[in-house]
Length: 319
Image (cartoon, rainbow, N blue to C red; front, side, top):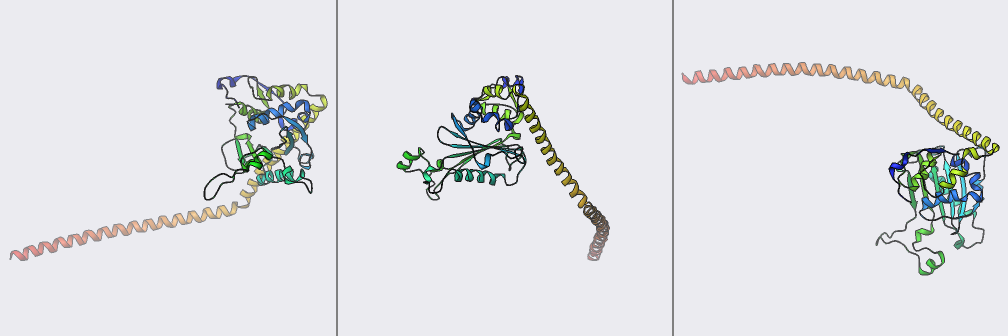
């Protein structure tokens, strides 16, 4: 992941078809693997070479949900499985769905009676276009880590396990997760991974971008190079996506409006009660103020009486 000269970010952009549409169609072609390989290489920090796109129940295309999520499962030369999912529609239980997706992938690839040693390493790449959880960053990473409760050491594999699995730390055998909160990105590409996030957010690639896979993406994802049929499919997909997002925004607005209407009378009554309480408190303050002034007068009278008594004592003492 290379850093960039900030001043070069002013180069013009080229509009392209969106990644979520392309990854389900033209990027599944082996001739175009270079695009997805570039994205995965920049994200994982190592060279990724895809050997095949795997078929499963999770990445079959369904008309009802294909604009809400995109599942693509690939296998690389290391025999590792990488799940790529794009999600536009907010889901409260999306994190659990990430866990389910990884678990399902593991189970699908282990036949009954197979040795557990055949389980493949799984990476879960989640590109989300909604505010998932609470966090200001735009790239999050998570993995399993076994720590001793007493000695605080990390659990390592035995030498024989290291030889068989090619890993040193026990946690490296378990799935790893990446979450890209695309909308949190501020559009300032400071490195080559940021260039990819910029593209995922804006469907554009600046001419000076050099991240792996983006040079190929400029050609493969060029809208003008699509066939008439592909253009029609892409335009339809974009219309449906906009329609779905519009429906969600409308539902949220209507929901707020309904809540406001439902509790309007309650809020009016509450406001009236608060005003009455405020009026009572002001009246009490006035009464207390009057009582305070009366007490001040009494104190002055008592003080005058004390003075008179002292004067009388002095006169009687002289006689």
